[in-house]
Image 1 (cartoon, one colour):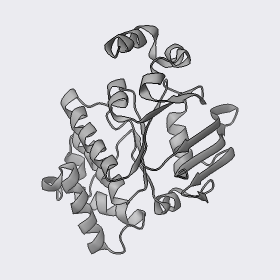
Image 2: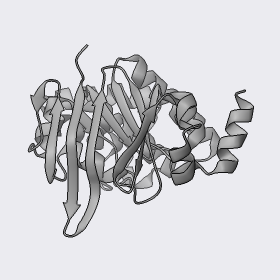
Image 3: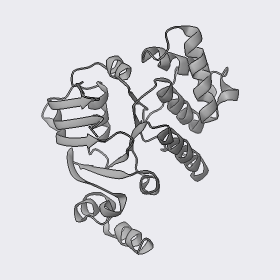
Length: 250
């Protein structure tokens, strides 16, 4: 099986600062990959490079067999790459349905307004916001805005969905609901790369975890191997967490 996403020697510099350094990463279709690391490790920058928000300073990004290194965000979206944002900023004066319809149009997943509206209602039903379709997005709670982000991502009909801190700011019940939605998305065959600080989420959801530190990819493996990796323990998890996790799982 050929990789859906392949990064080769990808770096991104901002002036004298190297935010991402020579990252090699291959993502197979159907994987759910957790991207973890300390604050400032380069996680969101890497997602921005994949989605065309930032152009790689060096290296190549290939998606579905094509070189997408220099594509703009709308072009990446039309190839099947969708993402959510850590700071959720819907169009506040537009309705919930209009926000999702706009995402469908942006990605070319709908040809006209009526089709975009149908797509919007389909995905709002999936995330549990059908009853809020005609509500102004500004009135949504944080948890609802996070679900709106998922609906917008799905409306783009992605092959790859990049989730950036989709659980940030949610309580335990809301996190459990989000986890259920993400599993439902994965069950549709959509490949997922998720930036996440909650290790509970990463360990229960992901088939593989990759770890960034100072912009470098320092580890990649199963959840069980990552929590035992000395480099990850030192850079991110801490020995106390790693010891407790090992004890819990034998």
